Image 1: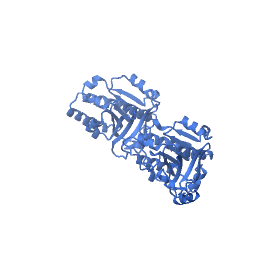
Image 2 (image 1 turned 180 degrees about the vertical axis):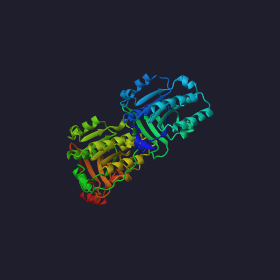
Image 3 (image 1 turned 135 degrees about the horizontal axis):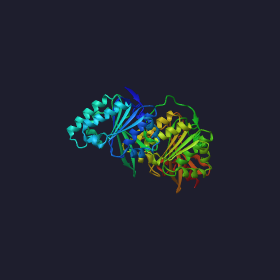
Image 4 (image 1 turned 60 degrees about the horizontal axis):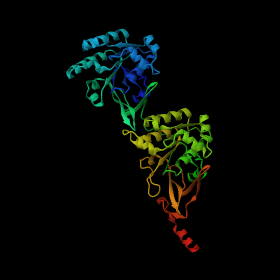
Length: 480
């Protein structure tokens, strides 16, 4: 028994290496979830590596129709059919009417001739139509006993709901069971792959999102948090002179920074200014924005004199607009972009919106822990922005439970002074640095963001309605 590649993008990672051969793996799901595409992709990619593959179908469509549908995928290479690496074996209606014995005899006759390394039977439960439960059970016992002797990797597809799959004899006779589903989410659908069982090997359980692309199925495995083996002591500039002073020289290389505040307090400007500063030092960067699309990001940056398009043309900057992405897909897209561009800095703008879009089977703190820790291990200095609800008054840093995993937390808020709304910034925490404890005013001007002097003459700033400090009030009384 040896491990062989699945031939499906991302599935080897979920299965910790691939399929075992010989074994029998069932792909279950309702109509349209991608079962046929998945087994075809597995067969044709295996055939490219000189495996001999056999596709058994009991569908009423002629082979020409299957060719027409599958030819839209890049993996579907007609030359492999001509060379004989992939053989089609249709089981026609007359054989099916002959009963289970006739079906098994026809399949074994072809297996003896073809001697396949990999077999797909699509769909397997067509063979039991019209049989009672006892007859179905007996057929599957006989069928699986014979498949074990074929010494091949056998991929079965079956039309099942999740409940029906659990009750089916197939689910406990098969060595592996993978369930494919398509579930409504935010006005659309997300496809999921769930490995329910895989004898003799480790696998990553639970739902993994996937898409059907022109290259076939692409699975997006969930990433477990990764710990750093070392921590860099280098500090990099924030791009804002006053903020560098407040953060003891800037952010630690490879750290996670949270900017939290209500709308309009300057979170995106700080993050953008940091990214532009990194790009100006020829350090590649990424902007992931749930708040604005790429066009708006470029236009808003030009107001401060930052030409992001120039950095994109130099392959220093990648902008990711993730609104059409599943959360797991987004994480992998970010990791792939970091590796492709050697990015050293990132702005992740809008984690509150990501939280609202998170699928119900993924816990947001767990997702963020995986994202944050993996980017730390890749030595990416990342700024995450979070929008709070309150303009003034008492507020939570995030309300999502992610602030403990951040190395630096900066709070931005409005304060009302003399009937005027002004912006304030404070560094709440900073691991590995002696940060400024003052609450300072920030100004957004044509060049970006500027940090001003502390609001030393006021107290109660965090309440949003500050009052004169006692010493200031005393001096002011004598000046009147």
